[in-house]
Length: 212
Length: 388
Figure 1 (cartoon, rainbow over the protein chains, first blue to last red):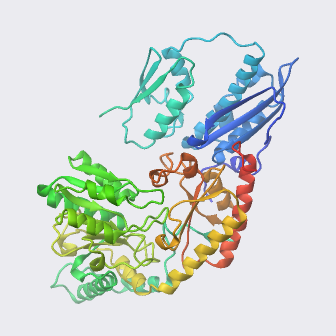
Figure 2 (figure 1 turned 90 degrees about the vertical axis):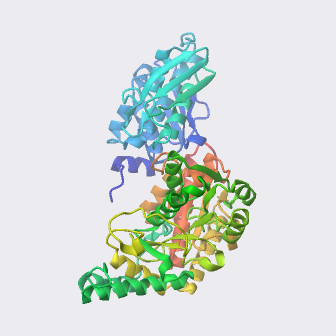
């Protein structure tokens, strides 16, 4: 059988590790939404002295890659300090799973983002976070580095899928080197909007496709 | 146990079909390219014409109204592009529905780029075309209307007779095409009774071989050839005809047995009853009136879980089904058919299509239900949305 998934991924899909909720979690985070078909919820228990993750659990609604990447991220993060856990990237999760198909890399990004957001939430609740910064073109581009072009398996900035970004008076305009009727166009548009719209001072996100 | 429940995609070929085809690989190997051909060619010509007649008789057409193609997709391309190019002088307007197959929707989208105007008529919650919207859409500019016979994803059987009446009373010159690829052999179909002008057929959804189909073209309908390269198929489709395929297609039609269809219908009903009695929070997608639903189709959405996970899990247990989930699709988009019916993204993501054939058994249905119970339970335990 030649499914596009590694043995490890299938193993974690069928027998995921660290599944469940932590009722008295110190921090939690949810990334994705049921509408997108991908959603990960992470719960953290942090030792207040050492700032070490002493317990981590997840719940997942999504495809096999989603479940397996969430599982691997919890394994990677367990026992690490918050500072160490922040350095975990989707590439680490991808490597641990022996390489995801390009269309599934966004699952690894989602799981790792859930971890980072949970840590951020912990820092926020414990007064460890800096003040809000206004959204600039650079902030948007940094966020777009978490959106994967499913045709290439790399982020839309590196893949040069994004031609330009404008941020003006709460409106973020993202210009793509892609036509509206191309494969994955709708998917990418939704991903971009989902990624940029949570920014505190952004009121509207416009995704503009190329014409020729 | 291995259970194949993706028969709306393609079916197992019947042994009698394979047997009928064998001779065209070893003995009847010539081509029927000319009336004045050698004896081997003449024999093959007779084979092709016998096959054409069997298929024509089955759908109530004349043999000269049947053109063989490489499948349903080519038949539909020929129907849609062929007619609008031949009739462009009468108008530039095309009407179709939101739940058509890719062959129809991609063809009309391309025609839109070439200056034709396209109206896509919506469907209701169960997938039925909105007849009022259809009537409103037809004008004197409308040259072609394409409405499928039955949807392969949610099983909706369209009221084709009414569709034809509505179209023709509004504009008698409008040509009506139907994609009947998942219809013939499963449901009664007669071109004369229905009054359609064009109908696409394929062999591989009724236990025939892949790579062969046909287009019914009512006598007198103007159509422009799309596949150039010789004068085959009444000068409407160039290229070497798929002789083994044509012979196999005719055999598949010849051996159709309505008792098999009834057997499949009972199995499908049994599968449905078993699933809803064992698994809570399941939504039926497509017609709830099963008399208006394809006899082999079942499409269910399981709340709180995502379809690709279900498909993969079931596949590991030997059960082949598909999903309308975004993760399952090539374009990472949820099923446009389920979305057009006004369902939520979650309904589409959790949807699983079961499509049966005469080769399925009751034991297979029992096994499928037991696997499904296990997978849905496990995935719901994992789901942050609830359900456990």
